[in-house]
Structures are given as C-alpha cells and as structure tokens.
Length: 228
Image 1 (spheres, rainbow, N blue to C red):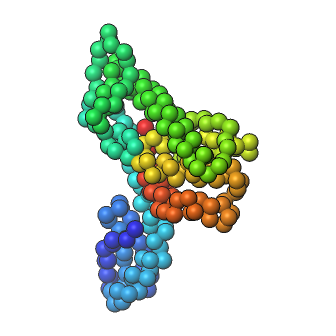
Image 2 (cartoon, rainbow, N blue to C red):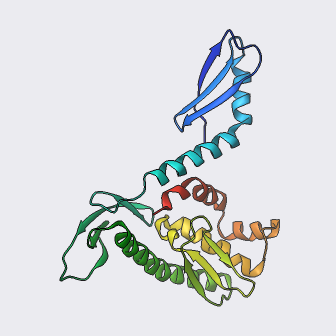
Image 3 (cartoon, helix red, strand yellow):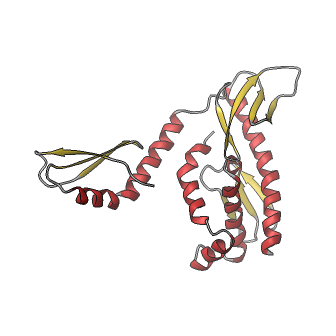
C-alpha cells in the first residue's frame, strides 16, 4: 500500500524528522526546512510498517466506536458484498433473518441484543454449510482427511487445525469474499500435513494457492470489518 503524506517544513526544527498520523488520509511528516525530498521519502519508507499498523489500529478503534445498531439502512457483509438491512416486526411471522436479492430482512422486536443474536445465529448456520462444502472439495482434491468442523465466534483467529486434525473456523469468515474463505480453508487443511508455519508449510500452501500472500494481507487489512 502506497503511503500518501503531507510534509510540514520548519526553519525552527534543526535535525529530527517526525511523523503524526491522524487518519489514513492524513499522515503528516515534520522536517527541517532544507531536508531533501529523497531523505523524507526514505524516512517514510522505513516507517511504512509502523504507519500501516497504526492506521489499522485506528480503523479498528473507529469501527468499535461505531457499533452496529441493527437498524434499517445499515450494511452487513456477506461473501464480500455489502448488503443493506431492512428491519420489520411481524409478531405472527417467524422471527429471524432472510437474505434476498443481496438485501437482509430481519423480523425482530426492538433491542440490539436480540437482533444481534439473530444475525450471529444466521451467520453461524451459513458459515457451517458453506465451509463444510468447501472443505470437502479441497480435502478430496488434496487427499487430506479431517475429523470434523466446528464454528466459533473468534474475532481475529480465522481458523485452526488441532493435533487430531479437527478444523475450527470463525463464523466471521462468511463475511469475506470466496477466494479469501478458500485461502483459510487451504491453510488449515495443510496443517493436517505440516503442523507448523515452516517454509515447507508455506510452499505447500503456495502450490495450491499462488496468491496466498495477497489473501493474508487482505485479512490483516480488513479484519476490522468483521466486528458485529
């Protein structure tokens, strides 16, 4: 990711160059007045990892502060798509969620907790069905046998493989695009063969999914979107 920044030059500043990050679009570099542009660019490049991590933390904090309200008009992710929500309350109809034409319909009474419960239940059900199907496809293709699938509510650990080859996935994966879901599945299935993250493990993942590094970055950069 290219870093866009603004340079503030000061005649009062004698030697040091410093950084201030207000948000993703507001990275400020303060430098002595006659500092060459190339030196400033090198400084920013050296700090790129720290800048990206700081911006990511700010995004996550911002989203936590903007918690879902589960009201009509709010967007929820499903397979990488943003689907708007429409809330009604029909007491004589089945309560819960349906997805139709990329729009969520929620029949529920007032109350954030009960509405969130319906969303989490729906996501878990969809995640189990989809992940089981995709795991079966890849396990047969790769000739790897697993002993079961479990769905959790983990917020940052997308999947795991136990010592006895039982797979666990976060229901939040169902919010991600299909290629990202497949990457996590391949990753965990490969742990059946290699129980660590050694070079051999990553070589095996890359043989199946050449763009796995891009998918890893996507998960790192977008995990803040999966908070309910």
